[in-house]
Length: 192
Image (tube, rainbow, N blue to C red; front, side, top):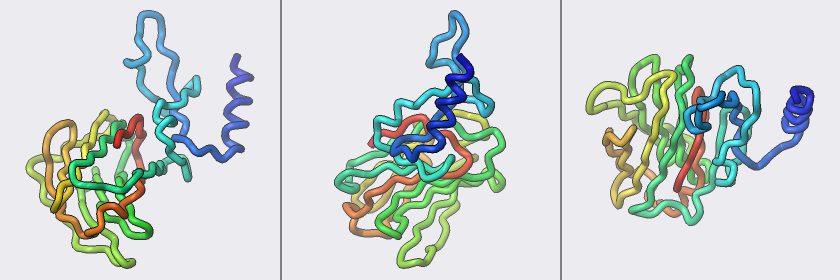
């Protein structure tokens, strides 16, 4: 059985797939449900995440791109689920409009903050760093991030706790057509 897995990994690495990166998981033992097994960095069996059905494109081992069909509109939400790597320094969640980044969420574990910003016309704006409390994300922990598009801002919640609002710096919300996630994180699901 192991030579087959080795051959599959070899073939998969030589083909450019338009799907989520492979998540590698241990096969759960007897009496353990698949939902309770967790991804590990030294896996034994490859497992394609159900997120592949969402049409993600992998550009490298840690970058995921997902199209936002029709762009963003007020009342549209994005839900991201995943796990922060145990040695994570940072990861990024970007809502992109062409070469611009309408919303850049940057959890920084070395600074215990989630930085927000925009990159418009080849220029970064002013960072926003205020937090309502302590850093809501932790290394080695599962998380959900919900980004809700409102008329005047994005509302961001982490693990179902509201964190902050980010006023729109890109006004044409329908041109925001790509979700990009990169850095020290394993993404397990995205819902738009």
